[in-house]
Amino acid sequence: MASRIPLAATHVADLTEAWAHDLRAAPTTERIAVLAEADALRRAPRDPDDSWRVIAAYRALVDRALEGPEGPARAVFMAEEDPARDGLTRRFAEVARGAPGDDGIRGACAWAACAADDRDLRAALARLLELHHATDDRADAVAFAVLHALAGVFLRQHREFEALIVARRAADVARRAPDLSPVDRAHAAALLARVFVGLGDAARLRAHLPAMLAAADAMDEPDATRARAHAHLLLSRAAVDDGDLETAATALADAEAILRRDLGTPGFGPAIVRSTALRLAVARRDVPALERCLAEQPAPRGDDQGWLVGLVALATARGDADAAIAHARRALDALGGARLAPSTRLARAVAVARAVGDGERTADLATEAWHLAADAALARLNELDRSVREVGALGPLAADDLDALAAHRARFVASHREVLEPLRLRLEAATRHGTLPPWATPPRGDLLLVCAWCLSVRDRDGTWLPVGHLVYGAQSLPMTHGACPRCLDELAASVRRDVGDPTGFSAG
Ligand SMILES: [Zn+2]
Image (tube, rainbow, N blue to C red; front, side, top):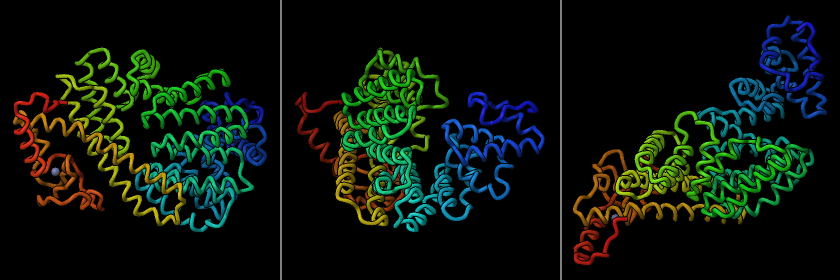
């Protein structure tokens, strides 16, 4: 380190782990000198590379960097800029949120972005709501940071209703605040887009695309190009969820073309490009695209759901039932065990059910997948209705917000009905053969049974209650789908009526 090149003259690519290691091992005087260089760069950032140099220096000097009167300012800078979002970022954020005044507010926002688990998220939410009420009348970068962080926490908790309200307010502040940078404005546009993806609202996202592209245009290159490509990728994902595969394909092609043409590399966010392409390939049952996506993607760690669904779809398309069954089994086990949001579980269970198909050997797996999907859809409706009850705490809602919320709920009610249909067809077929599956009438216990036909609910003690009584209530017992005695009787009667009519029932 004795012949160390000054920080400002060190190429960013040379700030390696080895550099950090040497610096940590260097004498105190030298470390203090590097820190002083980094502080000077932080205060006068001209070259976009400077902030990376500062981050590398601070990460190498973390304890020293937090000492003294400069500590909180360094911590705020690091908490906001450090892309690692790891334990070290959290450490910076913890120091930053203790800083006085606006620095402390920005530190709290950065800490929320590093929240590691549910408990952290709840703590971050409570703090951000407090800060939001305290900055309610402001239209500046600090008020924007609070709204941005708050919407991010709601999104991570899959509370898209609340996220939408707050993201709209963030966009409003971004329009009015004089001290916001083009990057902040682009973040505001991207935040609203992420909310629309969470809501599965491809129509609103498509309408929002010009605003995203305009915000991207205002940034410096290469960030502008990356943001443009990202906008198209988000549209592609929302369009797949919405079943609009043509728009999804166009948007994906647009993103890939931008990355190839304007950056000369498909290298930006390869993970999001690959996972978007894979989702589209599964939805289209496009065998060459599936083969390409799965070959390009490095083997995922653990049970990556998107990857497993892709494998099921490919095996089914190739007629390889053994492989399809093995992959589907793994996917369903992973879905049942993972702590996934109900919306994610619903989408993946439907993807497995569709990918595995209703072949003679795969029918049971498909039934299990539809069952998982129906239960997830119901849990999702419960979540949404809890959100609707609580969203009032955020203040009055705009007319378009109410429309977006109503449309979102209507989509989930429809998808709940849709995923119940395969279960009903299976119960009808079973009634015809006199072999009702055990899941149709599970024993009573700490489980609410919802009738797949009339949506009435069997309570813990066996009482059947009309629809809406418990399902959309505040209870938190797990729910599953089956059939109530009345609907089973009607089903049996209709089967008796249909005897002799070979077209009366379809086995689905
Ligand atoms: Zn019923």
